[in-house]
Image (cartoon, rainbow, N blue to C red; front, side, top):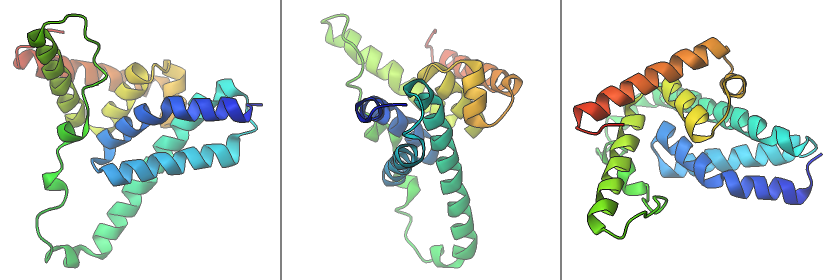
Length: 188
């Protein structure tokens, strides 16, 4: 059973990565924040009695399901109220730029050269842009495997699919990213 401190430490440690992962999926800061907060609340309310080593897998599964629920609600809402959106201005998602919302402060500075730091920041922005362009399931598998560092079975459990599907999604995502980055002159 996880103690309150273990649960709190886990949630603090996962918060930024979960937000960024969700932001890649929903492309709306407020919605991403709501989804992450809802997921954290669900974990704390329903699974606080679980051992601390089970918390990461449970949280990723909850976050994936909460994100899917958000998309379902959005799809239903858009279908029901599509006529009203015809009269709104075009200041919605089209103006959203993920690059503006993602800070580059997480990049370690291995060199004092401003040029090297700038190049590193540009490469990270290009990678993030290409991750954003991946199909939803490929992006989810890629982020869980390589960002969250879950193994194949944990990723499959979090995504609700087979291990083979995870491997296929990850392989396609890596291939698409490599192709896109090479076309921009970035060698992985």
